[in-house]
Image (tube, rainbow, N blue to C red; front, top):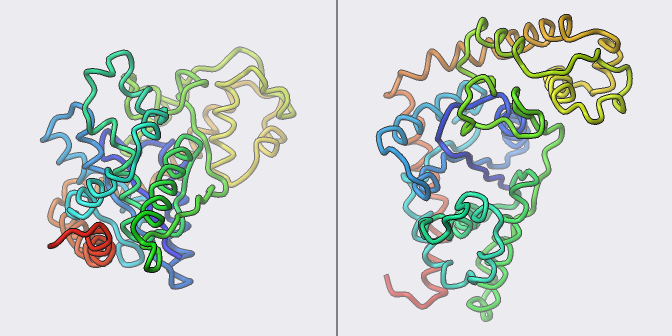
Length: 338
């Protein structure tokens, strides 16, 4: 079993990333290490250049995100943590797979439509072929399982389609080159919404910093953001059905449930009938205590470029070693002399 997942190194790591993905990465890492399996977690800096970007900010963001992941519990003694740019095989395999991917498949990718907006002709070619790089990211390591949310299922299906077609077209006389990865729907993966709009996901790209809890926020800032989070005037209900049509209230209750590994129903059994004047301070205190060790570790690491670079260098070396046979197999299957 080999698990691979990545995150773009842009913006600050926030509560939505942590509860929605990173906490489960740490759990999967620990379980995989105990069972002798592999986990590869990467910073998708090659993906980041598909959109307009500031080179200096990207370099700084890569180090910052590596520090944040390490602070959250990603341990390079148990898993492989690296950035894509240190493993040229990602870009090489993407180009090789571009011959197998089909325009019709890429035209159906909803994220290109979302990110390019009305100016599709002005979008970069990299944004259009972004899903082929995602396919390379997982196929390169003979990945068996990929943690996915609802918004990434389509891209994993594309990776499987590309792998299957490549195997059928070029490996007819030999064993298939690529493993077809299976999705993992992480247990207890929380979908955390904006503190300003309960119908939108908490996002690094939201222009309002008050919309999210950053893992770098100090205790006072966390409490301030929670207390100013958008709510409605009604008290909390005693049953989950009472949260229907109340997205902001549901979001805050869901955050509390995720932090305690509980359920929405369980939170409402404790706070049902109470107003937000009581619930918000309780949620703020819970957040502060839960995030305190992460924030302290992050603050100790974020300016230690030497340590972060060493972690990424070790991970990059290991990733290059594991990727090499698959890349060589792809060149050979396509009849390319090296």
